[in-house]
Length: 140
Length: 143
Image: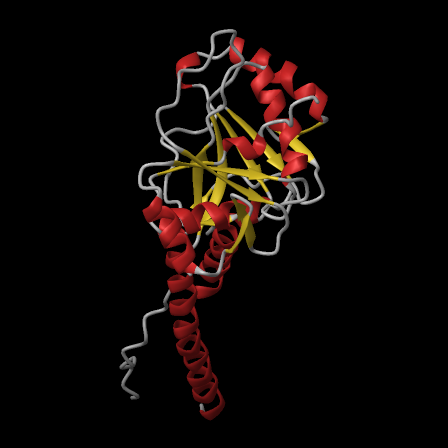
């Protein structure tokens, strides 16, 4: 009589295919909806047009003008190169607590403006104002 | 029987090969779940200017203006012309729950010239709003 000893059979696992299907769908969902852009914000407070004259500004203003996207900026009729860090260091240390106002002519891109603001900040400028670059040119 | 044994062996092997695959897929799944943020996609792809600025928004913007590389303007996911922005902003501001915290975010592409942004800022100013922020992208390594 043959012994009917059944082999300890490998336990029938739940089929993996549906599990993988679901996991793949989840994976696709998260891959497509995720955003990895590190968004940050820069405040550009706008002044409201009022009749009252603006409060007298005690601090010195240094006006920087961007004319083109070539990495050059005009300060007091001088051309400075954005890549030259030492020039900006001198500019900032010479005008310790000045307000650095950035102006831009037509055609200058937003990235150029932000790069200049970054350059000033990196060299220790306390107050950089970019709002002027967005002001409508006064009607002449 | 020989064939059955062979068959069973192969079947087991198939399953064994699946396990590393599933491990990898699970790892990827966990990575995307943890590292990614789920947010509404912008109506048009925008590459914001890079900056070292590291200020995060404390609240969600009340109005989101998206300006694409070819000056296409979307306000709250609706295509707008520049002239209509003021009226929309005024209407949104007057119906705002908390007018003091009302702020506008402008997501503009880094490559668009400033002169095409000026009319938009002008519209916001005409609408009487002062809290405006530009979206930037954190530059990982400072040059």
